[in-house]
Amino acid sequence: MTADGDATGKNADGTEDLEGQSRSDERDTTVNDSADAATGRAEAGSGDADAPGVEQAQTVVELATRIDELTEQLLRKTADFDNYRKRMLREKEEFAAYANRELLLDIVPIIDDFERAIKSAEESRDFDAFFNGVAMIEKQFTSMLERKWKLVRFDSVGTEFDPQRHEAILTEESSEHDVSVVLEDYQKGYLLHEKVLRPSKVKVSVPVAASADGDSGDAPTGEAPTGEAPDERKEE
Image 1 (cartoon, rainbow, N blue to C red):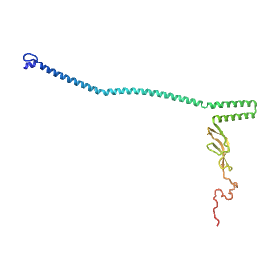
Image 2 (cartoon, rainbow, N blue to C red; image 1 turned 45 degrees about the vertical axis):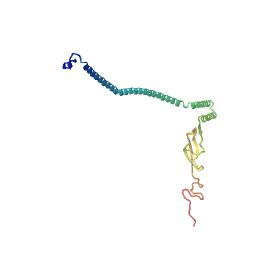
Image 3 (cartoon, rainbow, N blue to C red; image 1 turned 45 degrees about the horizontal axis):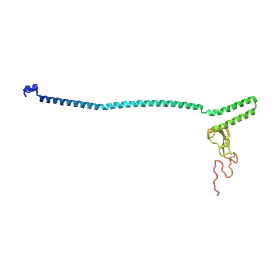
């Protein structure tokens, strides 16, 4: 093949060089295939690189949704608890206001009895009748408190002094008792369900050492004077 044939793509006899054209087409096809493959790999690589970002974005959306749900639940529960607290406070106030209702219902008839006794005394001017009426009302009142409310009034005179039940406001020396004993009861004490509600105010005896000779200071025969030890000298 001549130079002219190479330049024009024709043979010397003027016919086209089909073999050369075929090889050229094959080279073009190979180049295009390589380019397409490279483009495909690049796109695939780009897709792999974008996958973590997509997953992260989806996770963020899911977390945001969950946060909104939990926030709504928290607000709802907070509101419910606040309403519960207010309701309990109202019930507590109502209970405190009416806690003594039953006791007061028991006291009201006693007040009625006092009113009737006073009215009767105004009309009759009979002191004995008034006194007996008031004494009867007092007895009914204390009996009701003891029977229904377990409020018991206790007597202390003649009993041994107990600091849990008695409040000593006066003392008196006495040689008749070896222990402190309640001599007088100035104000009654009360028990509520067997526990001291109010101690009684009393006068208490204070034991003193008995002396056969009074204030002479001489000790009885066979006993040493107060504050002195017995004579332990031996006979010679």
